[in-house]
Image (cartoon, rainbow, N blue to C red; front, side):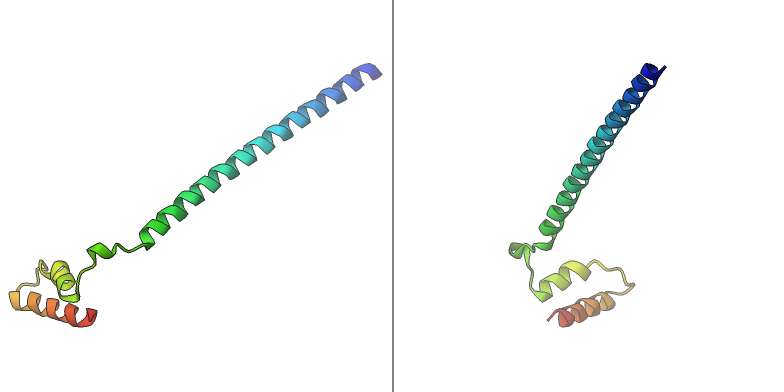
Length: 90
């Protein structure tokens, strides 16, 4: 009877160690995956934060490119929006 209890205790402790090891492994894996995702996000943010100065437009060019196609019902309004944007950008 005592031998059976001893065997059962050993099996329980062995199973408990296996479960703890599995849980630790899973936790480490999840943390690594999160770390990789965080690194990817940080990399994308750094890439977006950098401005391409080769494509930088002057204020009038930017205003024209941004607002010239605005449909405001009258060409005079569109021209006025372009002028206002140019003045705001300078």
